[in-house]
Image 1 (spheres, helix red, strand yellow):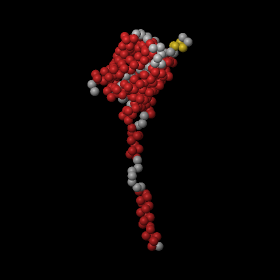
Image 2: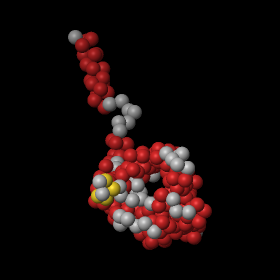
Image 3: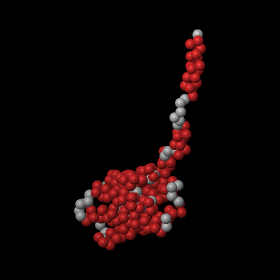
Image 4: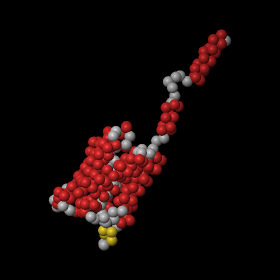
Length: 256
C-alpha cells in the first residue's frame, strides 16, 4: 500500500486515540467528575479496540511509537518505516491535544501523564518501573494476539488490556504506555514533569517484551514435526505377520 496512505492512517488513528482518551480526562475535569476514572479507562480501551479494527488492515494500527519500535525489534516490521511511523503518530497526538486546547482551554493539564506525588515527594523512579512493566505487558499481549487466526478477537484483547492497565495504573503514573499519548498533552499544557520516564519506560518495556515473546512462542519447525510422525491409518505390520504365522500353523495342528 502507498506509504502516504499508511502514514495518514497512523496520524488519524493516533489523533482519535488522544482526542477521545485525553478528551475524556479534560471533560471529566470540566464536568466535575461525571466521567469518572473507570469511565476514562474504558474509553481508552474501547477507542483502541475501534482503531485496531478500523485501521489494522491499512497500517497495522500501531498508534504508539513504543509498539512500532517493539514490532521492528521483533522482526515483524521494517526498520526503515519506524521513523515515518513515529513522526505521524506524534503529529497526530499533538494535533489532537492542541485541538482540545483550542476548543476548551487547559483543564487538568490536558490529560498529561504526570507521576503521582505523595507527601511532597514525586515518585519518579517508581513510576518509571511501573511504565516499563505495563508497557511490557501491553507489547507482550499484542505480539501474541496479532496473528491471522486471532484477527477477529485481537482488537478486543488489546483494548481490554489497555482498559485494565489504565484502570489500576492510571492514578499512579497516568498509565501512558505510549510516548505519543504523553507528548501531545505535554506540549499543549506546557507541563513536562517527569516526561522522560514516558519515553524511556515505554520503549524499554516494549523492547523487553520481544525476547519473552520469542522464547515462549511455538516453534514452527517443532509444530510441524508431529504431523510428519502421526501414525497413518494402516494396519500394523506385526499383527499381520502374527496372523499369517497363525494361519500357516493351523493346518499343521489340524493334521496332527
